[in-house]
Image (cartoon, rainbow, N blue to C red):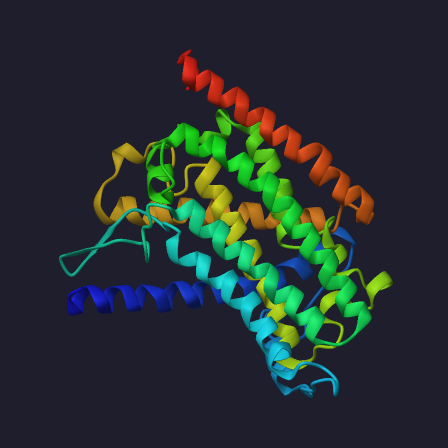
Length: 342
């Protein structure tokens, strides 16, 4: 790898890292504003104009709070747990194609850190590791409420990962590739997968809510039953990492839905543009779709009541997994017999 390419990739890593953290930070602000709007309140309005400095104030508060480790906890695992959750939430952003290539100072720069030919498998491999962060954090706390919350979260995430993985097989069958770049290119213009696989999208969207522990699947943090769930014993920025990882995961999940089902950076009329104009418009189209999904995530949280745990498991094992298998089989049969539907 030449020096120029190394600098290019390193710069892109820093930019993507800062964008992911910035969007996650201000997602907390916009969620509180959206909740206030739904509940006829004002929301944050004291820290800066319109409360825009509230995420920064919250970050400073988390760093300044007392940081303690329970006496009988496993110290190193207690520290590692939040780190795993945050790491797995951020690392998936490395293979997301943010837009078409852009030209800067005569050099063509790809707006994707790494284009793996097994990008979909990479995502699921990383997401499956994220379960360990929650489980380790709950177990290392030496608190039965934390352990119950961690077990709930782990069983929930594993259950919904199955349905999510099976549903994505249909997208792989349509595209013929595991690469996210190939999946985006196959949806050029308005040839989006949502038109061919609405059932797959619905399953994937529901599973994304459960994977990110968002309402109505937020039983892992069910305060009324588990005193905060798996992070009951955490404080200061260790707690902040757990909470922040949820918002980063929500951003990445929204980006993945935009890529897999809504064409990624493709948009109507894109053939009329080229060069840097196409790249900029592609990036804007991609982030517009992503922010739309983030809004829906937040809207659902403040609209739909929480499931009971038995309802959550029933939906995952007895409804979504069979539906994903049936949808996969129908798609495979149609493609095999080449009926010209796709």
